[in-house]
Amino acid sequence: MVVSLIHQNKVVEMARTPEEIVSAFVTNHALVDKHLAAAYKAALKMAKDVEEGIKAGMSTQIEAKSFLAQHRAAAGSVAEVAAIFAELHRDGTESAKANGVDLGRLTTVGGVALPEPEFTTMDGGR
Image (cartoon, rainbow, N blue to C red; front, side, top):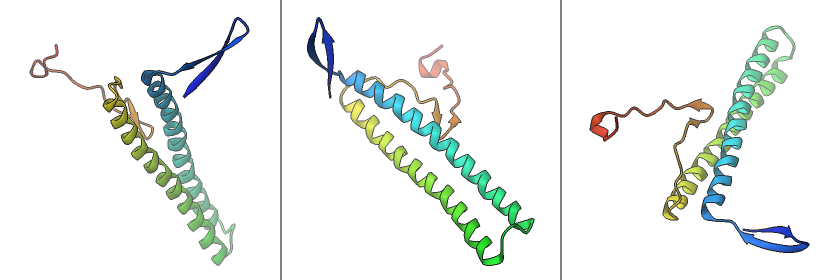
């Protein structure tokens, strides 16, 4: 990708480095991951709310069945999109490694924090 900058009233085009591209990818993937995790949790809560509404008699029989099924399917659809992004993350990581870009450490997956790695003298760490 080429980035255009204006310097001394002239447009200067600069190509981004692989590191800049990967950095942007990581930032945007983290944002997508965060929002999909939140959307999935909210969709599950909505399905529970629908269940409570049905128990309280807020929907008729066939209407309730469809409404609940749609809410459960919606949560599943969010999970399917998250799975697609997980595959894209894996593919992007492989591409970054193939291009010699240092990726750092993954700290969360699907909104779940990963534990810090433990180092022992067997690992060569302290």
